[in-house]
Length: 162
Image 1 (tube, rainbow, N blue to C red):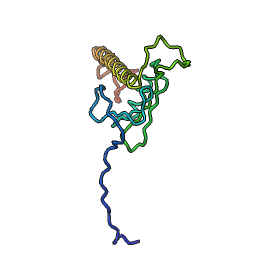
Image 2: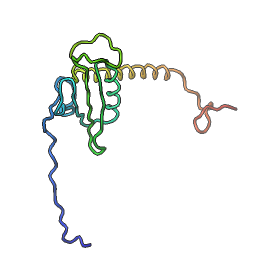
Image 3: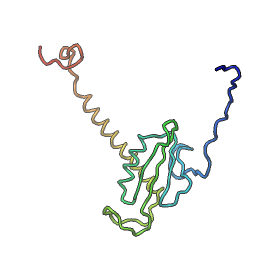
Image 4: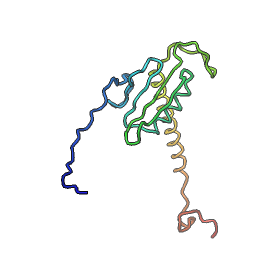
């Protein structure tokens, strides 16, 4: 097969999808990082996080599902080659349907955006607590004197026998 007559076609980069996507206001993130996808309602919304993956998706899904106002929360990575994560959140809203789990007295009308905001704040608070505990523990460990060189073997392991 001859490649002499084959010509490369240069394709233009596709523009970012603007088919009804809406930036979610009032959430402090980098611009163009979080979008409300089309077809969302106040109590059932889909969000797109750009440049995010399983690390945020799984942690955020777990924390959001701890909220008794949330009926459903899931995330998906549409394709491994795309740097985006989609998340769907559904809340009980104002409905009086029976809930499968006992809930404390509810405020009326929790929206999917409210649930996302609370989830992001709760993840941030959790990370702050973990970081603080890490630094306190690190300081307590570094104040303990390390074993001297003659107490370690050639691999740097504690010497059990002299």
